[in-house]
Length: 213
Image 1: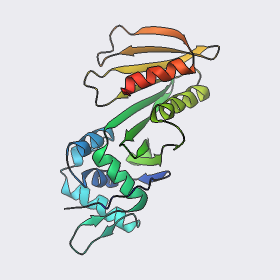
Image 2: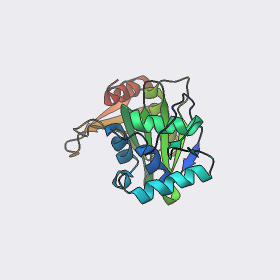
Image 3: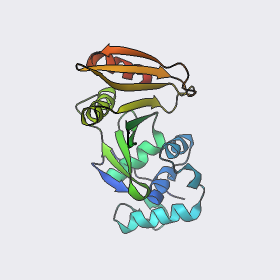
C-alpha cells in the first residue's frame, strides 16, 4: 500500500523515470490513475508489484519520497503535485508536434487547481512542468502549438482530449501570411475538411472547442 501527502505545490521541469511514473500513477488507485497511466503509456505496469516497488525505491533514493514506518510511501512538494494530478485529473489533452523527420508530444493534465505538462524524453522518462499561471489552459495549449509551428513552419500539430470517446482531433498547420489552417476528424480520420485563414483568436476558439471548455 502507498499513500500520498497532498499539496498545492507544482513542479518546474522535474524528470521522472518509467518506474517512478508507474508508482506515482498507482498511489491512490482508481479510474483517474488508470487513465493517466494510459496517457503516459505505463498502464500495463500498474499491477506489476516489482515495477511499482522499483519506482518507489528510486523516488526514495532521489529524495522525492520517504518510506514511512507503516510501510506507506509519502510524497510532498512538487512530486505530490504530480501524484495528485495523476490520480484526479479530469482532463488530459494530448498534443502531437509533427515534423517531416518525426515528432514529439505533450500531455497536459488538469485538475481544478493543478495544471501540469508532461513531455516524454529518452529512456522512457517523462518531464513534468507546471503550466504558466498567467494563462488559461486553452491558451497554454495554443502557445505550445504556436511555438512548434514557428520553429517548424512546414510541420503540423494535432490536439485531442483523451476522455472524448469519438477520438475527435484538431489538426493545425501554418496557413501562410500569419494565419492557420485547421481540420477536424474522429478516430477513423475520415473526410478531414480543412478550414483556412484562421487568426490566433479563431484558432484559440477551436482549441477551446476540442477541449470542451
